[in-house]
Image (tube, rainbow, N blue to C red; front, side, top):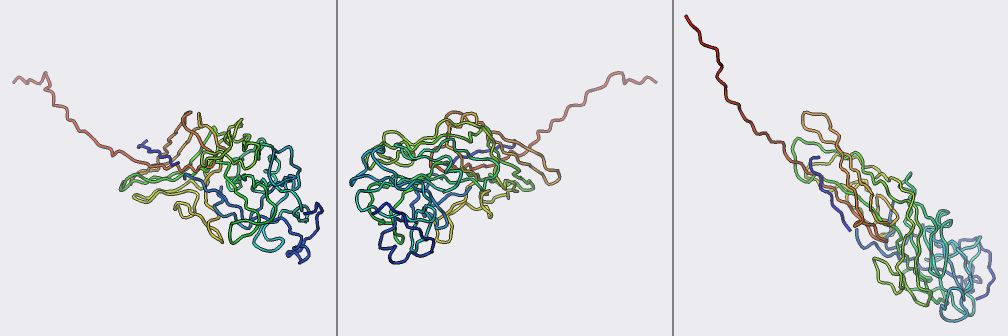
Length: 372
C-alpha cells in the first residue's frame, strides 16, 4: 500500500549427542529430523525484511507435537516432542536445517506423526515472548524498540506443518520438512522528491518522525484447533475462522527514520532513505532474494492520532536555509496491517512568489499658491 504526501511551499525418543559438522553414517541411518529452507510469503504491498528465500545464516525456533496417529486431532491430544529447539543450517551436513537441543539431534519416532510450528528469528527477545497454544503461535507483550532501527526484527511465524513422518519436502534444492513462514509486522518506508524543477531553489530533508506509535502488543495466530487449518490474514485467505491479530497496543513512542537528511535534486527520482544509493530497495543476498531494506518494522495498528512530522529546509540562491515543518495527523480510517509494506512517497512542490505592483496616484497638495 503506497501513501503519498504532497507538501506545498509550506523413531525412538532418545537423543544422540553430536557436535561434529557432519553426521556419520550410523547417525544418518536413524533419520534425524531436518527442515527445508523455510519459504517466506512476500509482503503483498510495498529494519531489513526477510525475502522469499530464508537465508542460510538465519536460525528459527521450532516446536514438534507428536500424535499417536496419522493426523493432527486437537492440540491437547498431542505430546510435545520438540520444545522450542533452535534449527540451524547445515550442522549435520546437507542443504537443510537441523533442530538441536544442547547439541543433540532429534529423530523420527517409528509410530505416529509430528506437526510442527515455528517462529523466526531465534532471538532471546522472541523466545521470551513466544508460546505455542491451541491457536498456534502467540507473542506475549512483544516490544519494537525505538533506540536502534537496525536491530528491528522481521518477526515471522509459521503455518502448522501437519502430519509429518519423514524429513521430506518440495523446496528444491533443499531437503527436509517444508516450513511456510509469514510476516507478523508491517514494513514502513519513505521516499522523497521535489515535485517539479525549481531552478535556484534547494530543498533539504532534515528528519522524518512517526510519533504516538504503539510499541508493545499481543499477537495471536488464531488458528482453528483442527487438522490442516491455515492462518487467515489480510494478505491470504486462510481456512481458520478468525484472522491473526495484534491486540492491546500500548506504550506509545516516537520512531525516527535513520539517515533522513538529504538534499533533493531538482528533477531527480524519489530518494529512498533506507538504501545507501537512494534507489528503491530490491531483494539482495548471497543466494539472491533473501533480504530487502526497510526504514521501520512496526507493530500493526490503527493509526488514529499517529503523527508524521517531516522537517525540511528551503533555500533560494541568495538566502540562508529556512526551516520548514509539515505534520500529517492520521485518523481512524488509516491502519497498518499484518504483512503489508507501506511506502510513503513525499513530494514537495512550491508556488512561485509573484508580485502585483500598484502605484498610488499623486495627490495635489494644497496651500501652494505663491502671491507676488
